[in-house]
Length: 165
Length: 231
Image: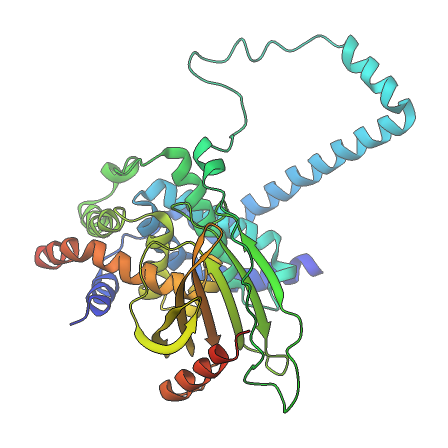
C-alpha cells in the first residue's frame, strides 16, 4: 500500500521537476550524458528517501544531492569541460538547442562547481540567498560574496554571450 | 541592467534541448525498482554473512576465507587501471581547515523577552572537505527562533574568506575591526555583518540574521543591536 502511495506521490514530483532538474544538471556539467546520469541518480536517491523528505521540502533535498553528485563527478573527471557523447545524433534543431544551452554552460564552467551552483540556484532556480545557503550548507555571507565574485568573474563572458544572441 | 539581471535573462531565454526519452516516468520506476531489488539482495548477503559469523564464529570464518582460492582479479585489470577505491586527494587533506567556533556570543536576540537569556546554540563545522572549495572552512553557532516554523535565526560564523567584505561600514567593532553591513536579501530577509578577525586559521567573523518580514532598515537596526550585544 505504502509503495503504491509512494509511486503516486513521487510520480507527480517527478513529472513536475524532472525536466528542469535535467536542465540544471546540463548547466552544471556542460554534458548531456552526464546531466542525464546525474539528474537520474539524484531523483533515484530522492525516491529512496521519499518517506523522510515528503513532509518537508523535497526539491531543496534533490538540489543538494545533485550539486554534491556534480561536485564528486567533477573532481573525478578533473576539468573535462568539452561536451562528448550523443550531440551528433540529435536533429538539427535539437543540436542548435544543445549548442545554445552548452554555450551558456561553457561560460559557467569557468567557475568552480560551488560558485556555478550558487549562480544557477540563485538565478535559474530563483532561490533566495538564504535558501542557497541551506542547500549548499554555506554561510550566508559566503553565498553573497560568492555570487558577487562569480558574477564579476563571468562579466566579460556575459558580454560575449549576449552579443552572440 | 545589473549583472544579476543580465545573467537571469540569459538563463531564462536559453533554448534547452528536450531531455532524453529514457527519462520517462515508467523507465525511471523500472530503474528504481531494479535498484531496490539490488539493495535488498545486498542486504540479504550481509544478513547471510552475519548469520555465518554467528554460526562459525569469527575464527571459523577466517579459516574459510584463508582456505578459499585467492582472486587474481587485480592482475587481470587492464594496464593503467586500478581497482583502488577513490582516495581523498592530498589537496583534500591539506585543505582541511578547522575554524574555531566564534569566541563571542550575542546576549540579545530579537525574539527574547525582557531579561531572558539566549539558549545554548546549535553548532556545526565544515573543515573545508565538504562542499566548501578553495580550501575554505567554517564553524558556526546558530540560534533558531523557537517561536517560528520558518527560517528565522541568528548565526555567528568564523570562516576563511579571501575577499574583503564590501558593505557599509558600521560603528560596531570586534577585535578592533569595524563591521561591514552587507545589503538585505529581500527574498529571504537575510542580512549579514562581517568583521576581519584573526582567530586561528580563520580571518572572518560573520553575523547573519534571517528574519523574513523585516524592512531593510528594521533588519539593519536589529543586526546592529545583536552585534552590539556580542560579548
